[in-house]
Length: 398
Image (tube, rainbow, N blue to C red; front, side, top):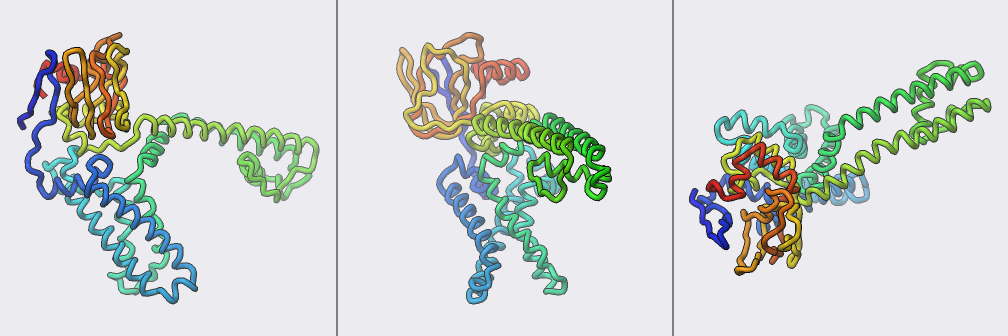
């Protein structure tokens, strides 16, 4: 596709490529996946779905109150039917339009859609309406009341519209080795605490501490600071060891909590909005890269939201950050003049060079969403993928 470009002070400013006419499938994918950046109908649909999910969970809770459910049974049933049909339509439209995801493409539509359906959020979407239709198809031949609890899984659908849940899951995966180490340390401490208490209190309380499994139950309850009190030491040595176990438990459980909390906060600060593949597909900077290369670049990049009139770069200051505009508009100026920057343009190409300074001042004209990258990370990626550096320097066409 052709792309417009303009030259300003000897530097080519990249402009978004002209888009081909959007097909119905592309339109559906953008509407469902790009609520944060597309705005308009996409944002409205996102808020409607969130409101519907919350309302449905509230309805599930209120149905357990006989004074509310009995007189309004018909309304509860009608609302349930309406929501499951909405969720079912949403699910199948997502599945149908999933071929617009660059990771799936159109080469293998059946296999691609099958793999897309196995993604965690798609499984949650499926479980949000499937029990209703299963019960309807069986016509009451099987008691499926236990499946009603799956209706509460609809609350997990909100994770699709929040950056917090992906950030938390990302932290659990990134810190999996540290968390596994903390878990092993906890198991070791449970075994040691139980063995010592078994030796100390076992002769005097054979029913509670006479076996190691019984002593381990006490150790777990004590280390977690729950302390049911159904098993307690009676000797002074047992009480002393119990105190040591309690303090040890505070330290042990503070360790994984600290790991998760720190990583969670850092993850939220790194990415203030979700980066989707349809968003990346529209950026000329990434055009032509293999999926794996694009994935590695995106894993390194952050995402930030800035308000209007915020200064993004100041001429003469150290160029330590690179930006790619996703949505919104900015204004740039240098000694030779000023011009506007739009989605697809870049800010901070000077950070490709060590100890460089920004050559122009840029500030936001509207609220902006931008992907960002530290200068040292940008230089590392440019060495690994030379075409990235060449495009930023405008040595090759976008």
